[in-house]
Length: 161
Ligand code: FES
Ligand code: FES
Image 1 (cartoon, rainbow, N blue to C red):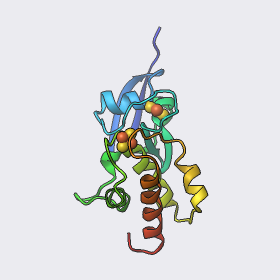
Image 2: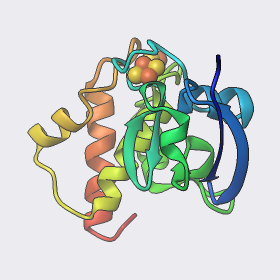
Image 3: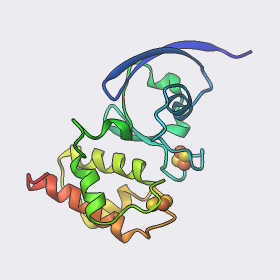
């Protein structure tokens, strides 16, 4: 028998309360119930990073994170990254560096990069590569993505973001 639980979460600054089957993933809830379709479903097994969202500021693969675990937490999806119709510094860096083609991997990469930028610390090139290694891109190769992530972090460090 299915077990149903009522949960609450804040997604992109707005509160939601609803019932879920305890087996539902956060990805399923965000896409199918709350219609944040910027959260992409790729592998569904934690390998591609397409479904990445921020949970209390930490980048997480939402496909392998149960919705009930997000009870009481703050979630950011790609829909919540820009402010007042202005793209974030991370989004601008991805555009400036040409790091987007089909765009399927982009929301997850932007959110992981946002978490790196918001941490306020510096990252070596090797650390950046390790931090984004959980994201698969079928289109761009990875050099432009790496350049965009590095640019976004550098802009934040120099206060030009
Ligand atoms: S869909 Fe979640 S990691 Fe691939
Ligand atoms: S831009 Fe197409 S998968 Fe990355």
